[in-house]
Amino acid sequence: SVVELGAGIGLVAMTLASMGADVVATERKIALPILERNVAENRPFETGSLKILELDWTKETSWRFLPKTEYFVGSDLVFPSNKDAQEGLLQVILGLVNERKISGWISHEPRNDQADYQFWGKLQEHKVAVRKMNSDELPKDF
Image (cartoon, rainbow, N blue to C red; front, side, top):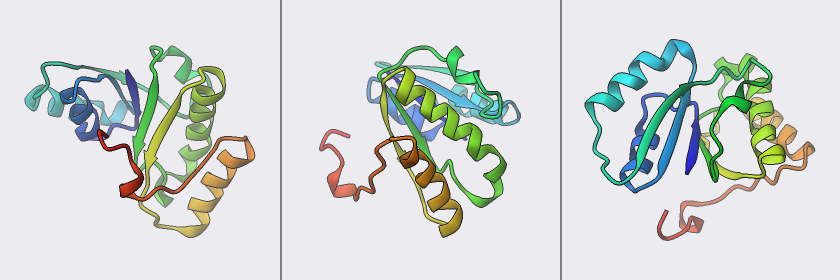
């Protein structure tokens, strides 16, 4: 089971569900309609499941309402125009890692060295292991 932070249009969540995972895709309220529509129109999965929930990173305890999962994932969560939400994202990840004791993967396209290093550095300051991985290091069945 996995929770996706900032699911966007739902591609990662639908892919994981089609591979058999039970997925909780989260997104901000403003982006939920497109996520819901994409999942409804492109539901290719039969073995896994996909549930959509609103998650506002700026609300301190919002992550506590998420169902318990084994992992979390995220894709393209840190970029200059969402700088105001990054502290909230940090708290969500810290809650999942430190309180729920789950691990996860975040794919990231570097855009702004200062913003990137600041966010990843804050995670490391909180003793969250952050490691850059190349695609050939991912598990073979990933």
